[in-house]
Structures are given as structure tokens and as C-alpha cells.
Image 1: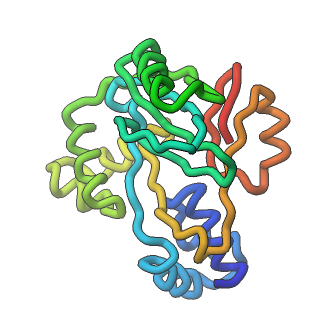
Image 2 (image 1 turned 90 degrees about the horizontal axis):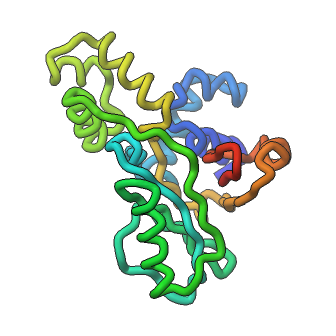
Image 3 (image 1 turned 90 degrees about the vertical axis):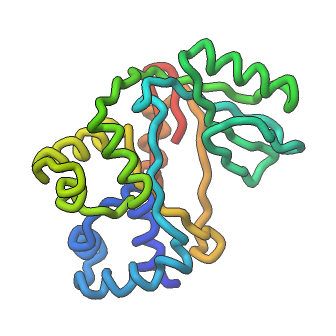
Length: 219
């Protein structure tokens, strides 16, 4: 691992769909050199690529809550982030905002009062049959090419590209590298704030993801 490898991982954490040619331009090295480095990282430092599907895609809502990590929650949740501090951050989904709140309240009965609760403003989506077929393929093969999806679904590659562009652009889909952070020598952290604009400026160079609205945000 050197600094260029770390930069590749950071860019992929921000957007794993970044073309290798663009990676080469950003890092000022040749495309073959990028290809060699990425292939070397995948399977060792980068364990695999997975598709994250925003619950909004399925017409649901989601929110976040942090609890003391003295005890792990064994119930249902989308994701859990283990923090260096004494916190675990959970992403929870529900049929509506009230359902998300009820699930967080239920977790609190077991884990104690949450230190932070954030349910962002969101607009659920109503997926078509085509959308559901598309996400099924992408879950199974995150790196599948649009032309292969088009052949499988019997539509034009232009239609597939348009749908994928829309889904990724709306953050309904997100391609995420599963990274061994210890091997990568990278520290990842989250910031919860009501002063999003200030935080955005402060963390601009290191931020890989932001979820925010007019009230608060997670970076």
C-alpha cells in the first residue's frame, strides 16, 4: 500500500463507479497503471463490491440512531457502523417516518436512550417491474455492463443506461467497496451536525458521503 493506492480507495469509497480513465486523470498516472493497482487491491484490501439499495427505492423510509456500544442490537436493521468511540450507529427502515421512530424506540428499550436520532427528509419511490428486475440483476452482479443487462431484459442498452443513471443520480442505488480499513491504513469517521454548511466546507477534501436536509445531516 502506498499513497496512490490509498487515493484510489478513497475515490472508490466516494463513487465506486468512477471509470479507471478518470481515476488515471485524477491521480496523474496511466490507465494501465490504475488497472494494475485496482486489480491488485480487489480481493485483498477491497474485499468485494456490493450494491446498496436505499429503502426509498422500495417506497420505504429510513433513519439513523446512535446508541452506546456496551451491547450490540440483535434485531432488524439495515446497517451498523462500529465507532472508535463508545457508539454504534444504526440505519433503520420502516413503512413511514412514524414506523422508523417506533423501531428506534423499540431499540431504546434494549440499548438505552439513543444519543442521536436523525430521520432525513425523503421522498419514497414507486418502482416499476423493470426497476425491480434491474435491481435484482445489479444485486447479484454489481459490475454487470448495461449491454448485458439489456440483452437479459430484452430492451435497448440506452434504456438500461438511462434507468441506471437516474437510480444512481437519485442515490437510490450506490455501489460500495467493502474495504479492509486496517490493511488500507485508512480511518473512517462520521459527523452528525445541524450546521451542515460549515461541516461541508471543513470536511470537503475527505468526505465520501453526505446525507442531509435543511435541518441536519450526517457526513
